[in-house]
Image (cartoon, rainbow, N blue to C red; front, side):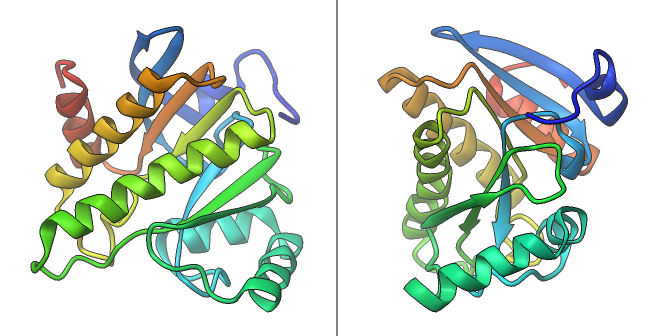
Length: 197
């Protein structure tokens, strides 16, 4: 992790709650994920990996043109990234060393269990890739809850359950934080974790 100062995380991401599962700290925070002081930041990407709106656009803008170039190389070699899958790049100009780009499902209302499975896979694949680069900390946005329309309460439950299962199976990650953009998601994630909003 680059450029960390003793109090920089407190200025950038306001931690609201943290608990420990089997040696891993699980945090829920309100803030700007592009400034999170972690080893890996997760991007809620689209299948082209070339940036877009919301979290995706913000991460690409903050990381600089090197991130876009890295994503273009991946797409040229492997094609688009389908829902539920993830790829990893360097972090560009972000404080994080790496970015995991994962594509969440677009909510349509039909086949809700399949949407849940794909969203859960976004989290598990992101964690697996972070472990593969020996990361000790990772920050997630609220995947698929923006323009992709995944119902926010359902997405929070899927996210927390997926991370809980991964940690229970064993992980080298010491910190997993959900960085919420708005207070609505913050309260939902706190509720899903079992904390008081």
